[in-house]
Length: 71
Image (cartoon, rainbow, N blue to C red):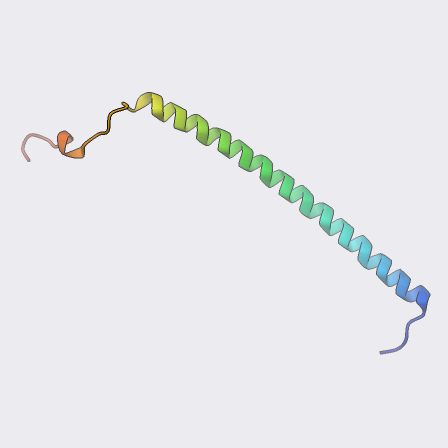
C-alpha cells in the first residue's frame, strides 16, 4: 500500500465523512416517516378498539349459549 500524502488522506476522510453524513440524514428521514406511520396506526387501533367496545356487550359471551337448538 503506497503512503498517501496528508492532503490525500484528508481529502479521502472528508469524502467518507460527507458520505456518512448523507447516509445518516437519509436514515433519520426514514425513521421519522416510520414513526409517523406508527403513530397513525396506533391512533387507528385505539379508535377501532373504542368502536369495538361500544358494539360488544360488556358481559362475557359463552359460545355454548349460542349453539343452535339441534345440538
